[in-house]
Length: 163
Image (tube, rainbow, N blue to C red; front, side, top):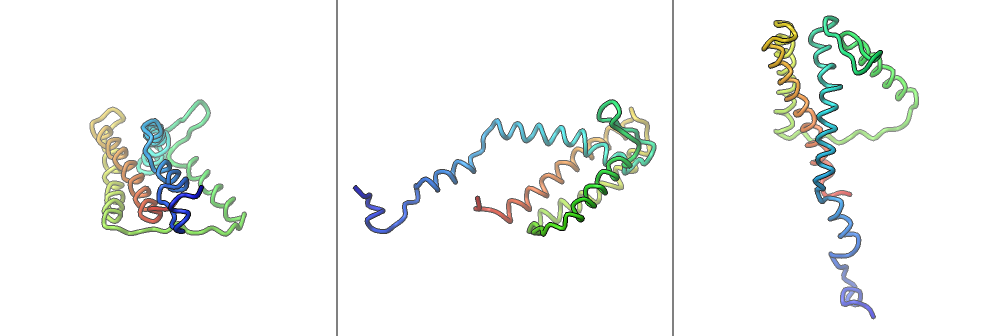
């Protein structure tokens, strides 16, 4: 027997597609914890050495593991150049991600840019155990959060309501 929605030709808003859509947007606490942990680890293992290497130059030594490390940003820059060249040689057509310049995005970007010279001064003015270094690392952590918020805000505003 047909339901009232099928008889009248109307589509029900609680069909399987709508239920799946609601389930996709439900925030799972375990997934949020995993995402936050990944962001924290990536910030410590990638962002901190990158920023410190850029602001301190060759005086900053970093190592992710035995045999994986370097001075400054040499290794990271080399890997990035290889990655970009490889992608450009593939000549795959890529659709540019839409970027929405909201007021919040502009403020976060301005803060990201302003923090870089502050970090350079802090990291170069004291030793590895100095209070300047601790404050600089705090700024790097805040900068990592700003980068993630900037990118998440652009994604959310461009694809809101889409699956």
